[in-house]
Image (cartoon, rainbow, N blue to C red; front, side, top):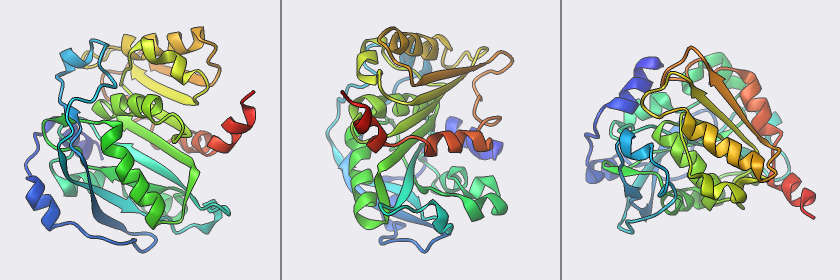
Length: 277
């Protein structure tokens, strides 16, 4: 698993959009299997180096509207106990920089396969693992068409859509929580960041952020600053876990913890709407 994650974070993209389209499968997968799908959407935002990403200010800005075919792995659960009258919960999983170039490696990164065969039997989420095009980073304008397609094509619960991502995907997670505030029930950003100026938008959003205190790729203050800003604006649903002995990879020790997913499943847009004054 760690090998896959390092590949996703460090290797440059090696597949062209045309090659990705040639391998694309369409339709709804059989429960328990991953299927490669695609949809038309904007390419995303221009890529930023770790140094550029560490400076807040344009974390949610879109600068490119070029339309391309975007590939994503789609998984349907086999355990019907997670299904309510509205459908299954949905987990949008965002990889780090360079991770979209190798679609087979991305398949290995995608849950639940990476959790092992036993965990796969009870994995409750419709899991969507998009491939971010080379030289791009995540944007809501890029991801929402994928989410719309999944909600239309699968037995998905629109009130239980969650987003989780690592590194560049951590930034993407924060971005989705801001720009798709009314579509996302909760988020888990690993070693990401967000402009504290966006905190007022997140005051009622359930967020569980993780960061390593020894991270030199994305400085931990990026998580600390946005979480502090949210709490200063009355946010009571945000939490931050800092690992004192951890560098950039703060997800490997975390993603197998069942408590993470129990927490996600406790969040829903329906509850947030009920709590609104």
